[in-house]
Image (cartoon, rainbow, N blue to C red; front, side, top):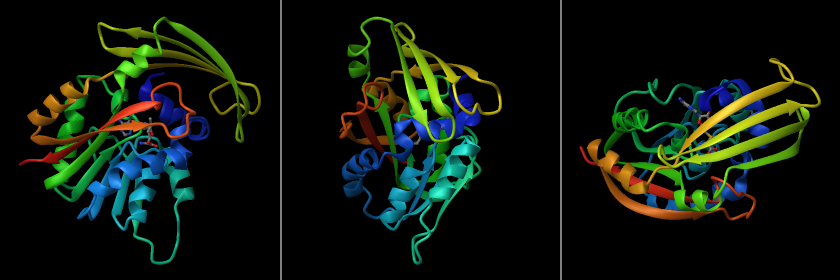
Amino acid sequence: MDNQDYYVRNGDLSYEVDGEHTDAGLTNAEMGLLSGHLCGVRRAAHLCCGAGRHVAAFRRLGIFSVGIDISERLIRRGLRDQETRPGAQPSMLVVGDVKCLPLKDRTFDCVTLLGNSLCLFSKTQCPDIFAQAGRLLSLDGLFVLDLPDADCVRAGMKAPSRTSQTVPTKSFGQVEWEWIRHLNGEKGILISQETIQFRGAAPRGGTERRLRFDLSLYDPRDICSLAREHRFRPVLELCCQDPTGRYKGMLKKRVMLLFQKDA
Ligand SMILES: C[S@@+](CC[C@H](N)C(=O)[O-])C[C@H]1O[C@@H](n2cnc3c(N)ncnc32)[C@H](O)[C@@H]1O
C-alpha cells in the first residue's frame, strides 16, 4: 500500500490517528503565519485538503474555499464537520486527484498545499502539481505550500528506528501500530514501513495492514527552482514550529513557502 492508498483505503483511520486533521492548535499556528498575507484573497483552492481544516479556516476569514482530496472518506468526515452557521461564507469539499483537478483555469487567487502534502509526492510528480496550481491561479495569485524541515527530520533519524504504540480509536478500538523508519540519503527520502493491527472492530480488509510511505525530503531551494520553471516568483519563506510540542516527526518543524504567479 503506497502513500495515496493509505488515505483512500484508510481515510477514517487517518482522520482519527493523524493529528493534523483535527488539530485546531496546529491550524491556528499556521493561520497566524498566513493570515497577514491573505489580504485581497477572495477565492482559494486547497489541494490535498484532507478533512478540510484549511477550507474551514480560510472560510472563517470570509474567503470562498474549495477543498480537493483523493480520499472520499476524509472528504466525508470534512463534510460532517463543516460549520453550517447562517451567513457563513460558502465552501466546497470534493473528491479529486491533485494531478488532474476538476477545476477551471484561473479561477482562484490562492492555492494551498499544506500539512506536509507535497512530501507525499516524488520528484517526478512535483512538476504536475506546480502545473496544476499554476493553471488554477490568476495572475499574481498566491501558492502556499509547506515542507518538513529536512535537517530536523534527519537530526531525529540518525539510525534506522523501530517504534510501536497502541493507539486508542473511537471507530476501531485499540490499534497497534509499528513503524520501521530509515533514511535513503541518495534519493532524499524517508522510508516508513508500518504495520497496523486492529485489536477491536477491524474495518473491511482484515485485521492487519502493511503500509509503506516514501516521504520526500525536499530542499526549499529546489522547490523554489521548480516554482520558477513554472512561472512562480518566490516571495516568502516562513518557519512553522509545532506549537503543541506533540509532534516528533514531520510536523515538528516545517518550512512554509509562498509564491506568486508571474504570468
Ligand atoms: C498529510 S495529509 C494532509 C491533509 C491536509 N492538507 C491537512 O493538513 O490537514 C495528505 C493528504 O493528501 C491527500 N492526497 C494524497 N494523494 C493525493 C492525490 N493524488 N490527490 C489529492 N489528494 C491526495 C491524502 O488523502 C491526505 O488527505
